[in-house]
Image (cartoon, rainbow, N blue to C red):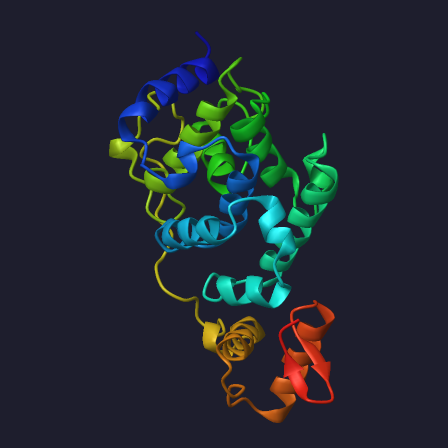
Amino acid sequence: MSGGAAAVADLLRWYPGVARDLPWRQTTDPYAILVSEVMLQQTQVVRVAPRYLAWLERWPTAEALAAAPLADVLREWVGLGYNRRAVRLWEAAGVVASRGWPEDLRELPGVGPYTAAAVASFAFGRQVAAVDTNARRVAQRWGHGTAESVLPDGRAAEFNQAMMELGATVCGARRPRCDACPIGACRSRGRVAPAPAGRARGAARFEDTDRYARGRVVAALAAGEELPDLSPERLARVLEALVRDGLVVRDADGVRLP
């Protein structure tokens, strides 16, 4: 057995016994899976899980989401970060509601190669590798080919979930747990130096970024509160960007959600 095949065999034996009980793993509904994938982009699983369930309770289908006012969608999204994701998800639901699921899922607004592959494999059973940051890191470290090159026949969905699980819980970027890794043939075992913890010297605080300010503005508008106390220059810059991205509307009465 080649090193890549051995690594995949180890991975698939390991995964069933350690898989986290995540709600999006209990469905093959493409809409529900798309919601989870969009929510999980740069947002921790522990934050996403309850919000995902609440979202599907409110909007259980693409048709229901497409019919919702964008302002309501943005209010429901507050706290998940990167509000543009909510707009793209709402737009994608509109496409699905009017035309159905496209053969090439990348035709949907906000859906790139990874998200398209994830929905294709988990919902439609297509034999494609969904290569996110975790899966790419795992494959690079084990050194026996890329995730795409070792994709096992007929088991893409299980393989993709297992790669994500290993990268998220064992083969972490900063604190790899080589002692808990099931990949016996991994060429990096015991050789990956943990990344230094903490913020790099000279790096900006998150609270000083426009991304943070954008989130505060949207959250304030969603709650019907006054805009955050920012410098006039920063507030103007942030509002201009939010208007440009379709997250905020400016009219005679001031600014509001769309």
